[in-house]
Amino acid sequence: MIEGLSERKYVQTSKKKTAPLSLILAIGIFALVVAVSIGSGRSRLFLDGKGAMIVLGGTLASLIFQFDLMVLVKSMVTIFRSFGGTPDRHVQKSMRDLDKAIVGGFTLTEIRKSNGLSGEIISDVIFMYQEGLTYDEIDAFVTGRVQDEFFEREMATSMLQKASIVAPSFGLFGTVIGLVQVMQSMSSPGQIGPAMSLALMTTAYGSGLASLVFSPLAGRLEHHNSVFLECHKQLLTKVGILIKRDDKSMDTVREGAAA
Image (tube, rainbow, N blue to C red; front, side, top):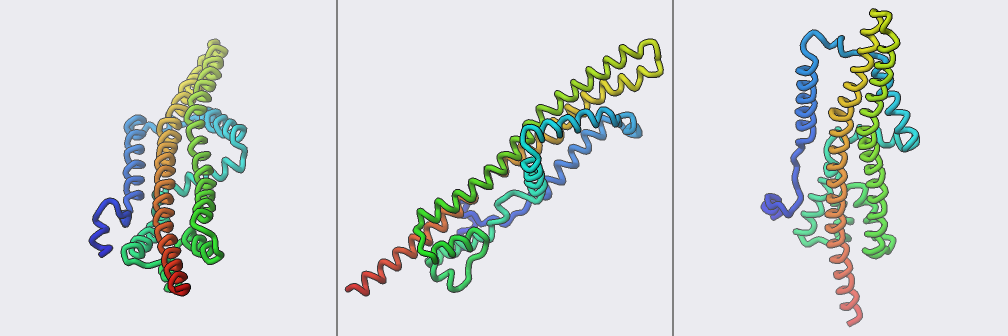
C-alpha cells in the first residue's frame, strides 16, 4: 500500500539525491564565468598577494570580531556539511519507516518491539516515551533540540551575509591604499604598475568573493534551513500520530480490564 502512496506528493518518501549533481553543475558554471572573465593564459595577471591579503585577512578579522572564533569555526563546519546535500537526507529513512508504520496501522509500542524504526530523533522519542513522558513533553523537548541546531545554522547564514557585505568594503579599502601609492609613485614610473594593480585587484577580489562565494553559500544555507525545519516538523507530526495511536490503544486496554 505504501508503494502506491509514495507516488503522491503528500507522502514524503522521496529517495532522490540531486544535491551533489546540482553542486557540481553550479561549480562548473562558476568556473566557466571566471575562465571567461580572466581569459586563457592570463590568469597570472590576476594574482596579487597583497590585494588578497587585504580582502581575505580583513574580512576574516571582521567576522571573528563580530561572531567570536568558536562561532566562526562551528559555522565553517555547517557550511562544509552543506556540500553533502540537503538536511532531509538524514531523516529520509525515518520518514519512510514512519509512513509505513502509519499506513500499516502500527503503534509505537509495536514498532519499538520489532525495532522497525531508526534514527537519532526516533531513538530519543522512543526512550522518552518509555520513561512515561507525554506527547506534549516529547514534542517540546525535540522541538527545543531542533531549534538549537537551527539557531547554529542561522548563525552560519548570518556570517556569510555579513561577509558578502564586508568583503567589497575591504576591496574599496585596498583600492584607496593602492591609489595613494600611485600618487606617491608619480616620480617613479616603475612603481606605478604594482600600486595600480593593488588598487584594482582588491576591488575585484572583494566583489568576486561577495558575488561568487559568500552570497551563493548564504542562499544555499538559507534554503537548507527551510528544508531542515520543514522535514523535522513533518517528522514530529508523524511521530505524534503513532504516540496518540499508542495512547488510544492503551486506554482501550485499560477500559477492557476495568470492565
